[in-house]
Length: 261
Picture (cartoon, one colour):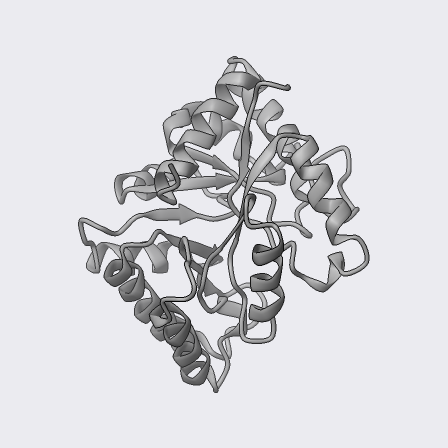
């Protein structure tokens, strides 16, 4: 594995779950050749811890800015104002607009507000020419419909934690988006293995979504970026290619998308 370089395109290493051993978690990731770690924002409660982590580990950690759909409440316009302020501040460099999207799994109370927040943040992705990192839990078709209507030559990004069918994968890639593949690929009954089998590697990026969605054999424990090679290995098995090939293509996809030379 020494010659391979991996990217974790989606992790929340700044979350409280890592407060006791964050440096050790970073060390383990780098030891596993996970050299590029992309951090989507959640909301104002987390911005400072995310930015501090990126400052401390600036060779490996790359921040994004956005408002997570489950953080969209009655005050969402105030949250979006902060997102805009950060993006307008030249002293910060962000690599994507995320994590944005629509989540109708837990709570549909703020459905309309979620849709409005999603639209306005897709506009930010287009304006700043940054990839949009999209969360679609029980909302894939709604999000795709919005993206198709807002289509722009500069609009690109990742369908994070992709768990849809082959038809949905095709729709996402035709829109110019990559599919974020995480620990779910190691779950027997997820159906994702059959989808990944028929999707070209050029459409895939790796992610953990840590601390959640831990791959087998660590399922049930806290997830972390060091587990990215497990996901790569599983994709290699499914696609009957070497893990080196998976690392090379998916990392290349990530660096091109986030404009890292």
